[in-house]
Length: 229
Length: 320
Image (cartoon, rainbow over all chains, first blue to last red; front, top):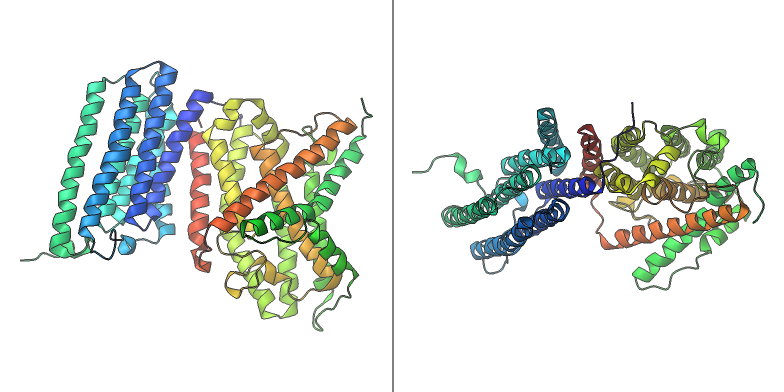
């Protein structure tokens, strides 16, 4: 077999950032504390902004700088703040934030293996599509697809509302990543609209978390499997 | 300039560098570790004194043990000393014996060494030695897929699985360093090395605590020169793994590209410096993470596996 060609520094950097984002997604699968999950989400969002800056510098798209700043302000600062306050309020006085520790339905090692299978499906399906944009490293796009599937997986294997909300927010991160690499010239107004969509989602999830917590006195969705009168 | 060294001498120097450098690197790590814990720590040369002391002591063997019990440490050290012939320790160009085996060949030799030590431990009937070797075998079987995927990545990157070829590829351009496949494979290999040299996730590498005892326990029944050989063997293994990480994956610079005496001496110094640098990083990691429970080891290995598999995936879409 021929040796694989090196893709060049710009694509390399973009791909590495995308790969690290996917790894953080896997980190969420394993993480047992809501506080740490929020930290991982912050890191992932920050990487997304870094990627936007890299693409902006390489493709000469000044719009993307604005997007990077806006996205960082919203996803690295605002959303984690709101999430922390929400989880802090649902927790009792003696604990800062309720843990989501017991909510694994699979052992962490099996969850990671299941995640690898999901990521493989995402990878090879998108690889088969052969999408080549001017600014699109094919790999980063496939990594985004894998992230989408793994974040679905996260929402499925965890039984608590907080992890599911974070899974949903990282899903948005994955889609932003795909948008960045496929259509980095997307009008700023559209991207901003997406970001504010996220804000709506945060508010809705916040309501859900609180409503569920007041009714069930836990964050677990395990109690929701049977109907109550 | 200085005189050129004949090729066989350089080949011999590769082995000697590893053989004589290994205890020193262990000493440096022990010193750094002690400083991190706020102790003064042993002398850097302490491992040499330990070995010298043990080589002077008398050797005892359990009554029921056969000749294999005493042969095993010799076979293990021989295997460890063969590996430096196969990997780029000092030179960028392949030495004649360097093409005797590829990365898998080196892996086989490492496994052979570990296998004979485990078999010798079985001979003794000592429960601790058997516990150690059974754990070592079980967990290295778990880590094996990670190593395989790292080798696959190397093979896809270079079209061969010779360590010299990968080092040359990494040196060739910045694009080769920054590509995700290379970085992911390097990280996965580093995680396996941490695991194999008994740092994290469960072992305390010098401790005799039963819960996290893997490598240390295997040599319980050996004594005198044989015990010294086993100790030296695990130091050799550590330096060999560090060399593979530094000279093949992370920093294949500073190797001699000619046969000049000066270049080779510089390469020896560079190798030991790189190994000590890797050792310092390892000591910091070792001291900043809590040890896991024994059977949590699957979580750690599954993380390494994930990284290695992603490395191979990224290559399949081009671009990796």
